[in-house]
Image 1 (cartoon, rainbow, N blue to C red):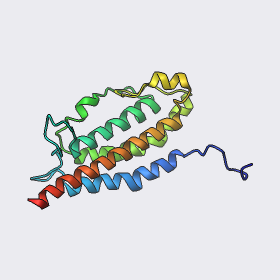
Image 2 (cartoon, rainbow, N blue to C red):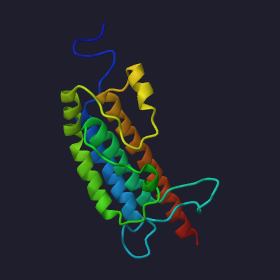
Image 3 (spheres, rainbow, N blue to C red):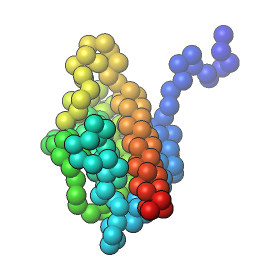
Length: 179
């Protein structure tokens, strides 16, 4: 028997995920982009660690930030929030625009996460996320497609891409120092 108030299956609250995203991951993303020069002259923010056509394809820091915005828009705004959005996932990885506005957009999207969860719970359903590679229909059939799972998926994706961004930064900066 567990002590009173503890559950066999712990539940991570959207507030905890929001805190991790805003206090840990977003500052880490901002720092990595700043280390690469941000939108300044001679920046590395649009440089990929491997060349186009490589057997080991990679993404630029700017493309990763743009993709994370796509993740939040698809899984947060569309799936949880029920908003009608259009997403071109493949185009996210070809992004060459300024990264500063996307960093601000990412912060704003993260701040909307608690409201999106409230909307999903209030509706009693989840919309299909736009432009995803996840088999959502299989998850629905299995009964695992829940607001809790979606919030966990968002945290997983942002954390994974933050790590990828840090490796991208480290590889690109190490090349500059070794020349």
